[in-house]
Length: 133
Image 1 (tube, rainbow, N blue to C red):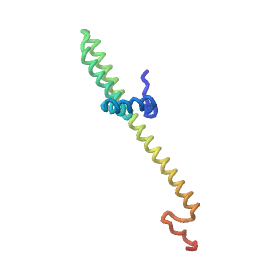
Image 2: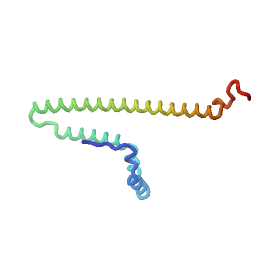
Image 3: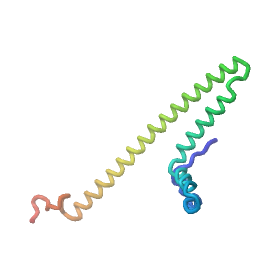
Image 4: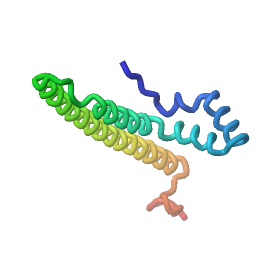
């Protein structure tokens, strides 16, 4: 079972120490650690795809045409499933982004209404209508 790291777990004290030490002793090493921290999931996906393509090219034929046909069919099916999962993840990421945006807007609107009630003025600093100036 493959586990994925989220961005918070990659910003561990060890990773930060390695990054700083890398920049001090050999800046490309520090840059590589920083790239891993920021884009680790994307890099892992790209390396997995390269490894899959390399391994599938090495063992293309088994000598049994029925098995090779079955294998190709299953690989196509798995690739389609991977594309579906990637599309679902992108859709979910978009949903979460919209959810965070809506929550942020709600919190901001609540802050502004509390501020207006507290100050007794509108957003532009003018006194509310009917109040003495």
